[in-house]
Image 1 (tube, rainbow, N blue to C red):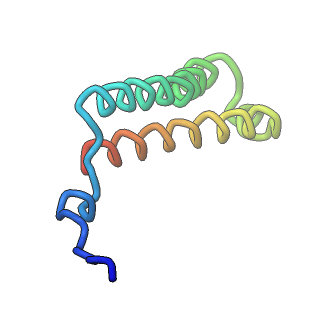
Image 2 (tube, rainbow, N blue to C red; image 1 turned 45 degrees about the vertical axis):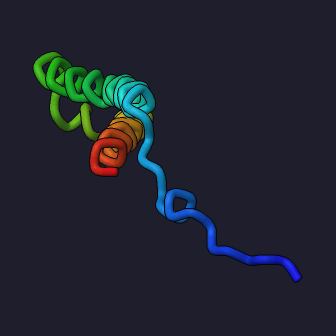
Length: 85
């Protein structure tokens, strides 16, 4: 008969990422924030150059901004997830 002892406590608990891993994922999250920042800056700059009606009626431009802002939300979620554990 085999002796079935329970596994050590350290194997059962989820491990937190290392400090280096947290820094790397934070840097990736910051890079993912850049498209959204550029999209917002583009909105502000274009608001001065063209009419507001044209700015929000251009479907391709709206889709581009939506994609950029969605990528940035992913960056925010990544940063929050890394630092909250």
